[in-house]
Amino acid sequence: MQKRLEKYAERYKDVLPPKWKNSALQNDLPTYYFVSGFSHPTLPVVHHKGIYLSEWGLIPYWVKNQTKAFEIRNKTLNAAGETLYEKPSYKRPIAEGRCILGVSGFFEWRDVAGEKYPYFIKSGLWDTISLGCVYDLWNNPETNESVCSFSIVTTTANPLMQKIHNLKKRMPLTIKPEDEGRWISPTTSKRELENLIQPYMHNDLVAHPIPKTANNVKQNRNIPEIIGIEKYPNLPDL
Image (cartoon, rainbow, N blue to C red; front, side):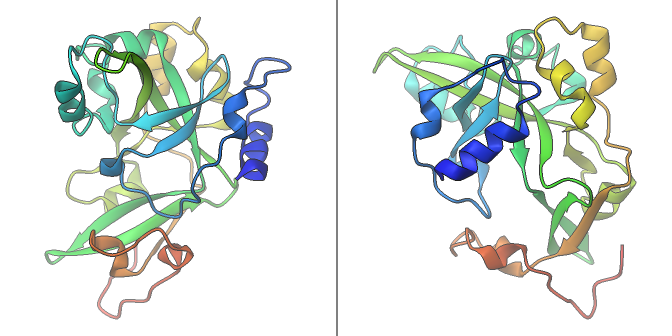
């Protein structure tokens, strides 16, 4: 994992502080091929100050106890970009805590005649897709532990994702490489941010159906085969 984290840091060197180094990169992390947000994995996110390990499922700083924290983080895996400035959980994070999660791709489900078909979506140009996220720091009063956690920002779907995520028609906020620095910079204005929180309209995203193992929460889905191309005879082309 160390080499992967070093490669991850190299990918974002243009937006990280000069000579940045953090001991967190020495920690071992599991290899993820598929990860459920409801397991609240710890993932490396890119802040304007560096790369920090953060739990998926944002816990707002104002949460009073651990029970409430565990409840709210199941509801904050994603954050609708249109209401970030309105929701109490996100007012401070969108203003002060923007970050990026770099992924090789993401998963979504397509409904065809009531049947769910899983897809893997990636970039045809880049090895890494930058997902726009927001984070917050919460102090657990029961353990006095400081917890960094994040939500993935979502937008309305672009034409490709409208065909795949065809019921809710949403997609993760995808930040273009040239906009990564602006997204995480603490000096970016609200107007600039609102211009960034838009569907990804470039045509480099590609998608393919994957095995229905991805639908089964009782199976181990964190396997390399999970992102393999699966052919379904009755599945219409995108």
